[in-house]
Picture 1 (cartoon, rainbow, N blue to C red):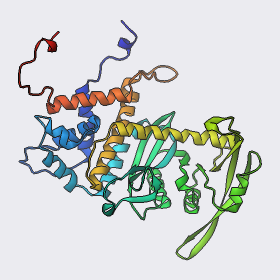
Picture 2: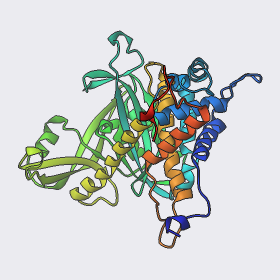
Picture 3: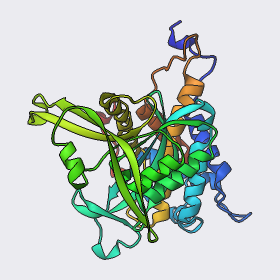
Picture 4: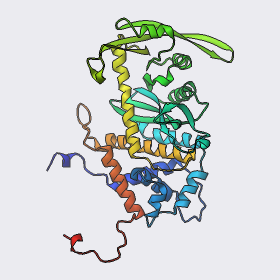
Amino acid sequence: MSKQAKQADGSIHEDQLLNFLVNTIDEEVDLDLAPNAETTSEDIHEVLVGACADGTSVSTLCEKSEDSPHQNTVLYHLRKKFDVESVERIGNTLLQKDVLDVLPEQVEVVADLHLRPYYGDEDETDGLYHSEAKRGTTAFHAYATLYARVKNKRFTLAVRRLEDGDTASSVLAVFLGVLDGLDFSVKAVYLDREFYDSKCLTLLQAHNHAYVMPIVRWGKTIKQELSEGWSRVIQHDLTAKLDGHSWTVEFPVYIDCTYQNGRYDEHGVARHGYAADAPFIETPRDARYHYAKRFGIEASYRLSEQSIATTSTQNPVVRLLYVVVSLLLQNVWRYLHWEFVATPRRGGRRLWSWSFKEFINMIRRAAWTALAVRRAVPANRPPDDRFHR
């Protein structure tokens, strides 16, 4: 008997994975269907999960499935039964479900902004988030996410849709409120450069959280500091203004210097500044090393692109719902991998090979079976010998 066969007493099949996801969503999402409705909430959630795992649209999946509800029925309930606030609230509950049971007593958290480019009609950008030009557009479907990072594993704790008027500090205030309500301590908060401003720094200090974030070259003083000298720690300050009141927030900046050595065809010294205030950061190299941990967040976005339903709709509720489900798929995969697949042993669990791609393929096949997705196409004449072996 192989070592793999000795891993566990049982196994988890594809249909069980799909059931786990549908049941998880169904416990928190109330579609308020009529008692005599032919379609059940489980049917709609099955299509929703299947479309995300398949990387296709709800309409396409329903069209090629014999046992799915009509596409108009599914889309009607997704569009009419929710608003952005309820999707965010329910989504955060779904994302935290089960995950909180496997998190340690102290975690590192990462907050980030993710911009999905909008290339549609310029006259139909109301409700979108506008920012500096990126990838040929200034309008985006934008989302802020809060992650817990545990030994290179990332669990999404909250997601928030952004629109014009939202600021980094308003998003951070919401996320810090989420953290205050969770039953673990925060080792440190890692933030992207979009959060580098006086209001965000004030919030972090008010909540007494350790933090690390790259600084932006604002003003002569910091530009001068980042253009000369060697690795060092300096004190810096920013002035904030709100409702006619102003204040100054002071913080340490760790300036780390490294030689380019021809990387990216560049030479000389590269200087990077980090606003950091954490007990485990003593040198500029520490700041650079610990901030590099947040780069794993990009992997979550790449995985999300593999497991999100496609759509041409500009409906913000539907789009946010697809984002929530795509992030939920990652959380469930990591949770099940750790709790049910990894082998308990002395010194730590053994993580058996089970990639996210394999997990998504299993969900896809289960959804195809459950919905009776078409596996053959009509032919105008019988297949000849070339179709047989």
